[in-house]
Image (cartoon, rainbow, N blue to C red):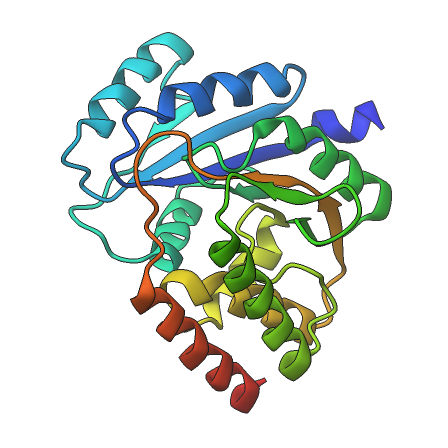
Length: 241
């Protein structure tokens, strides 16, 4: 297994917007939990006014510009396009997508990698909705909203995975390039479209239980408009997949 790991390189794409208080810790934790793995961290910052990019430049001095790549954009342009932008700069044969706000703990990354090696999966996705998974720090309303979103999607789309709206995933790079090119959604619904289209294309998807922790610093970017977009996206996928 170790020989297989040594041949692989993992490009970890981390989109950011106003994550100055979180980015240094998430980078430290990634390095801590992947001591024997070849990886690069690609930070796609959408013009954060809080100084996120300056912190990333300081981190480059500590860890090296070959390990931490800053690939900024001038303004907020959507989550899906952030991944596409990061993907252009990825040199690994595997790509990890994760949030910068510490809701996705890097301690799960070894489990993702192990699961992929053991199963040969094209995609390994973190799930809150199986034994061993869960959420921490959410209000009852947010839990109900998330669970309701998943129930709706399962009822209408039959995707074959338990957590459609999660955004902590490991992809074979070639698979991500294929799936992302067929997606049209932006924002909150983008993750759902990605996994539904991957399932429809017949890709092998495995799940790893994770505990999603509400962001430590900063404010959540999920609002009423995102929920409306989700419902519109669900209808779109129902018609087109």
